[in-house]
Amino acid sequence: MIAFQLIMGIKIELTTSIFGYNMLYPYTDNVIDNPNISKEEKKQFAINFRLRLQGKVSQSTTEYEVLNFYYFQKEINQNQN
Image (cartoon, rainbow, N blue to C red; front, side):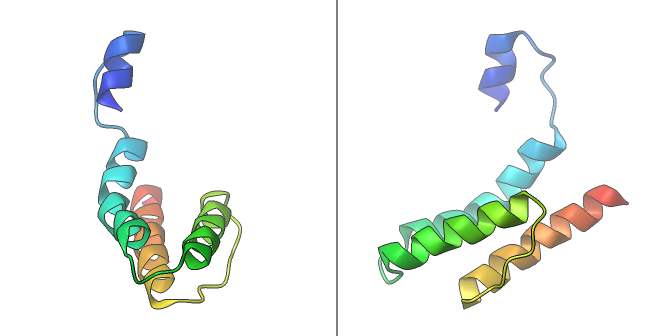
C-alpha cells in the first residue's frame, strides 16, 4: 500500500485500511495456504469474508472463519471508538 502512495504522490502514512489489512493478513493467509483446507472451503471462506467486508452478516461455519471474523470485528470496533 505504501508503494501505491509513493507512485500516486500521496502523503505516505499508515491508514486504517493498511493497518487492518496487516493485522488480518496472517490469519487469512493461513487459511489460503493451508493444504488441509479444501478448495471449496477456501472459496466459501472468501465469499463469507467478502460479505463481512460489505457489512453483511454471514454465518461462520468453520473454526478458522470464527477466528478470522473475530479479529475482523475487533478491528472494526477499535476503529469506531
